[in-house]
Image 1 (cartoon, rainbow, N blue to C red):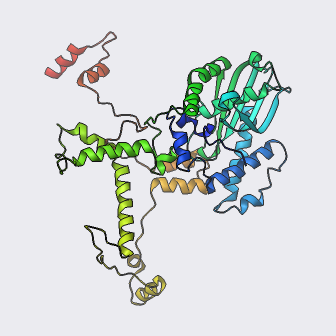
Image 2 (image 1 turned 90 degrees about the horizontal axis):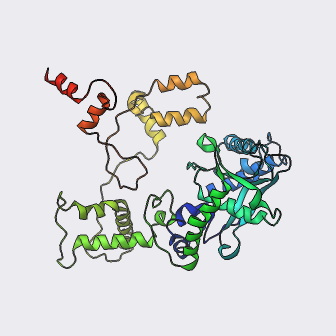
Image 3 (image 1 turned 90 degrees about the vertical axis):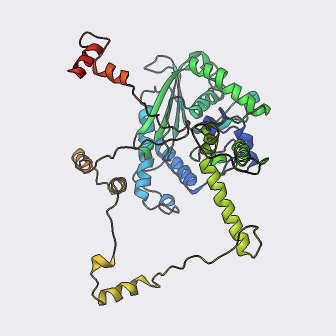
Length: 430
């Protein structure tokens, strides 16, 4: 299994290069690197994608290790993802010359003072004289078997792998920095349906990114002169601290907001929300979900205490509403059938939703032609999306409210010859 850096893991670099206090906070919370069933399955797929790429495994032979992997319901589908990954890697390297140096599962590490940043790149290829660019070209390829879409463009993990690979390869190719013209970075994602995402950068641009962005972030992390920086990365989807409710910065902000809200000096809650004081209440809105989650946990802890016979000041245990249910549904179904209750009255059912239907069709391989896809799409209509207020760091694009002047400019292109604003006003008055 690949070794992971706990302090400056390349795979988490999109977070710690911005929020430099995050790495040490993860270590303090014992969250620096935690495996999971999905991660272990991904590691297994990496291994077989590598073996197929190297010609060490028969593509037609699904390994027993994958067939018997806990939680794998469809080993054929999982194996197809491995095959797609290997095919995409071959496609990304189609232009390399016969002099190219190729390594799989290559350990790459930063030299010198930033040696705590290291990782394993799935494929590293250095072509001293690429047939297309006529210069040296470095390829860095990374398999992603998860569901979260990852773009190769501006990808800090691949950027770190590239810089670290250059430093590592200098021991074999001392003139690599002089000859290197371009760096090609590829992310292969079978589960997203896109195959792969690729980005090619000038080597000089990579060196500049390293000096102006990566090194300052690494120096901050290593020196301890760090800070928490909230932003779009602060979500359950990206940040382990956020997911575990253990971000010290957010916890302190919530404490400050709740202290201010309850106005402890006066022993009373702040005034009711209004347009005049919404600037204060928007702080509560920002952390609404986290505060609600914390309160739910408090209820759970207090309930456990009460069930154990402990006193919870201000609360008491009562009996909730009792609900009836069948002891055995098969016996109940037979009883109702004998009593002449029709089947459509014995059971309640509803058609699966459009997204659920699409997922089932894809899994069963039934959306196998453009005609079938078109027929399915013709069954669907889109409801108008409602405008919803969300925090400004939400990744969705903000709604644009067009002004009357915008409408006029769009209907009567005032920058070209033809009817103008006066013409519109005249037409409205007629």
